[in-house]
Image (cartoon, rainbow, N blue to C red; front, side, top):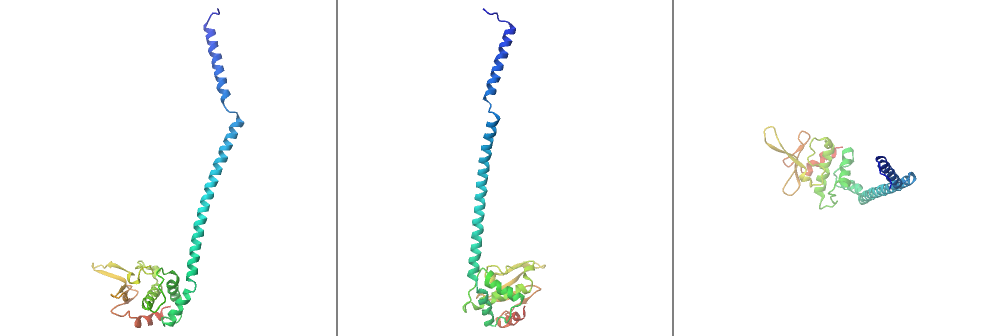
Length: 213
């Protein structure tokens, strides 16, 4: 029977450790296999990212196409309206020519006004009021006003006003003021322009509009 010594036991432990290390080493993938596996994972990630980007581009393209189509449809719908508006204004002696402010006001009424008032005799008075108000807005530098008083909004033009407090604490209204029938009675643009006390009547405001260019 072999005699066990301290040296023999240590030798046995070393052999066991060596065999264990060798066994663990045998279980690790080789370099080529590791590279191949990483390559497959990388390709998969690239494909997913590409598909996501293509999906985003497709959505953006659909949105842009829809927006362009809507814009073109609106343009087609309004084609010729500017000529109708100008003809209406001239035939009703609202204006005889179209200077800078007049052209802007006519373009607003024809294409950019969201209310798109019909060109009928029934709406004649409201149509003329809206055009003249737009004309005054452009003539007196409306885009530069500190408060635009809701001018050129889609609201009925009787709502184109705002209320303010004076230095004395009183309340004053700047903008358009209408009568109970929904027609303009007064226009107060502060230091720019004021028509009140019945002076807005078309017989008086239209000659003024004729001289605004």
